Image 1 (cartoon, rainbow, N blue to C red):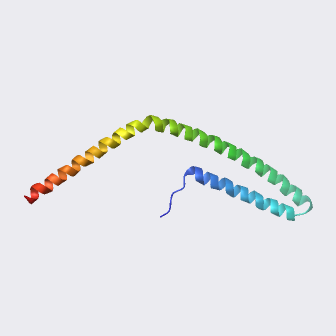
Image 2: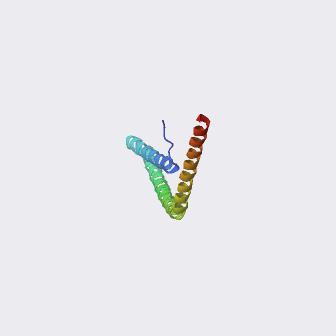
Length: 107
């Protein structure tokens, strides 16, 4: 069975992939000579800057989401717990009703 990745995990994986691609460009740039090497190094600097900006924005938005989630979770948690109790009580009543029904049919 596969597990579904969260959006945060998908973005983190993309950022890691970008980092690996940048490292590949660095390796290719080291092999290149002359003007091509200068151009690759310039592009790598731009890509690193873009990647760092993306990582900062991602971290900021993830933090904001987690803070909002926690605050809502704390306010909703008591209601969920009460609903859970009512649900369990309803299941017990249903179970008792089914047992009674079967006992009446067997008699």
